[in-house]
Length: 382
Ligand SMILES: Cc1cc2nc3c(=O)[nH]c(=O)nc-3n(C[C@H](O)[C@H](O)[C@H](O)COP(=O)(O)O)c2cc1C
Ligand code: SF4
Image (cartoon, rainbow, N blue to C red; front, side, top):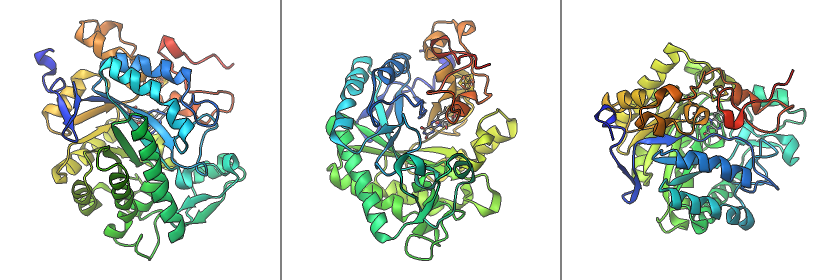
């Protein structure tokens, strides 16, 4: 530990008992390497070995879909049946061996899922289509959820969390950001309902809160639940903005979530997250600082954090309580170790050009690559 990174290396307890040795988390990054209908694969284990051995405080396993009817990538992860849960046991064993806890991100893609992969219309609060996916998927079709659909989705999240818990997970994160199902209910842009799941802020948060309550019940309150909260759609007044989340953030604390990880943007605005811009970075920090000021639980976020110096500055200036990095740790799994060893000059630095994200929809590629990490360099496609 160096005094230069005093706040970063302050341990943190999640849910009262899960210890993180430092305040850096590997934010969820779907690299599309699952095999055999959503099973955790040897290639994914190899990838997570690099991350878990790299010394972060906690790593998230990303995008485990809770429903066979909600998928986005052919090689995306699933967590809706026992054999998918069994395939995760090696990851939890590795996490124990490395002393780095792992959180499982539970996902329902909602209106940003693909119809072609499931043969079913995607579930939405009000039928608002995602322009990005509807361009990519020729069969894309939406369906407005009725109360039976809502009850089924709540059950699917609870079942998936229960499967994760029984397989060895100590923590799940609900993906309620970036325009996917839970966040599409939170946003007035995609949620135009007039029933008890729409209209007011309280009603728009109802589905998320019912999912949390169902998971806590199903796992006897033994599984730690955190929420990745979309705090701004980047759609201006038409969408969700961070100033409009006061009741929701307070309700999440009362509902028993252990922490909140903030994110911004939805599918059609996600390009704002791809290239670095000072204004986006500042806007994000303002939003997170605001959420932290109204939250009773620790608040973190990911976005353009390039190393421990910036993480330290964010923690010291109380923008957040824990700090996520996706691309910086993808570009170099050993960023933390190299910094601690005084080898910062050897770090493969993320270039923030967003090519890894573009790989996800590049039909010539079957996984996500990097421009700088020699372990998974993008092949030359020309
Ligand atoms: C290739 C790629 C895949 C991602 N997959 C996920 C995901 O599965 N779930 C999620 O919540 N966020 C996902 N994200 C968003 C990241 O968690 C993070 O919010 C974003 O990259 C900004 O943080 P960074 O600047 O540290 O990369 C992904 C981002 C990238 C670049
Ligand atoms: S592909 Fe580019 S943006 Fe993505 S992690 Fe690598 S260097 Fe960073």
